[in-house]
Length: 69
Image (spheres, rainbow, N blue to C red):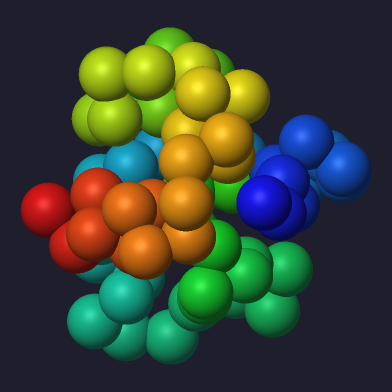
């Protein structure tokens, strides 16, 4: 399992901003493949209904599936 969000301190963006930015151009400091890294802990928990550590302990296919929702 990979836990990129736990290994660094990426800049935090509100979820709504990330959704809007996806349709446009993301800032250079945003990891397009791991947008969840840029969520606050509260927004992360609200969206995924679990902590970051629980999320990153899931198999990769499951994390990808959750992010598509």
